[in-house]
Image (tube, rainbow, N blue to C red):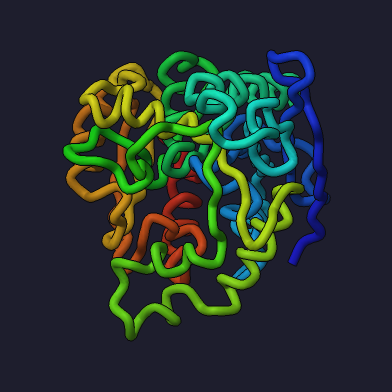
Length: 318
């Protein structure tokens, strides 16, 4: 095991008074990394970055494994998540403000983080990794700023839906949602055969995850955290309406698409439809992970995800 340097930074967003939390891990014995070994990880619509990428279970936290392999690993929380500033609309009652933190705002926050890292490390490009809604955010940024992206990894990203997505409960869209952390385990494992659930997500892993997510929101109460609801409005305005938020054909960086066999949130036909539209990428790869759900980055089979990501990142092509 190498000694890892760990940093937590708050950087300004484009909005006065809104700061963004960046967490960084890298090996202390490597002085410079370069564009092909500098990574920025983006979370999904409900859970902050640390609950996906920095939970120390199994072979180690996601960030740790990538950092040990010689990469400079950064993870972003956009506004409304983790250690970043909550917008004023998240401080009152859920129905007291319009939906908070739209996808467009998240793309702007990601842009601020990319610019910060590129300037701090004197790089022209970095690699982006996004999960679920984070896949939309990183893909939209990559389509709009192709010169800044070396490679793109999309883990179970959103795409056009042929029915109501699971994230949308219907009814009026509030400023933010109340997310019941402990109740989520059943929904997480809904597609997993009962006899395999403890194997796929050990109870101790879930408990470690729950502790970290509850600590991520200073207003957490009774096992519940706040999650911005802007993504639900965007689901209705874009994905459920048959309207892509971005044009995949505009992405020019090499793309790795990762998907789990048991993903109920993003069914396999959506990945096929997205993959077929990534025609502008220098090359594209789609890997289907067996016995994995939408939350596969926190499951036993995540070693396959990490192995595929490392293989993709180490390739000298593109």
